[in-house]
Amino acid sequence: MSEALTERVLVVPAAVFQRLGYFQGFCGNVERYLPELLVGLTGLALLFTLGLTALEVFVIHAVCRYCLISAAIILVMFVLAVSYLRAANRHAPSTEVGPSETPQRIAPKV
Image (tube, rainbow, N blue to C red):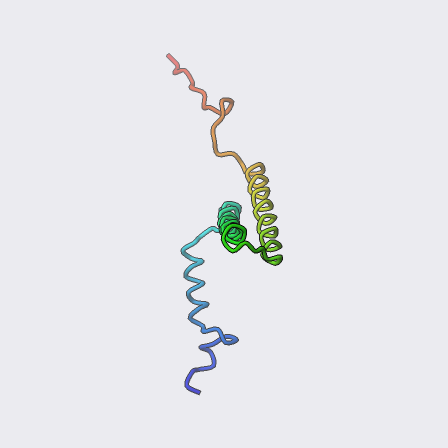
């Protein structure tokens, strides 16, 4: 055996886990942006799926049943991600200062 036993964890090189740890350190607080990430990623997947479906219909002139099922699943995932984003924004504390929260000036005593 040329490799040490500790250099691999279940067929995955240990360096992969190190890189993932570095990546997590650079990402920081991912949970804060999770709803936006989900909408972005599922939105990209939806656009890609719509492009492939358009190619099926307009170029190939054949429709794959499994491709349509996959497109429906991606659409449901996108709708769920958008509803999650809306719910997260509704329950998040507001950082904007409204009219009732404006600081009041105190007149100086003369």
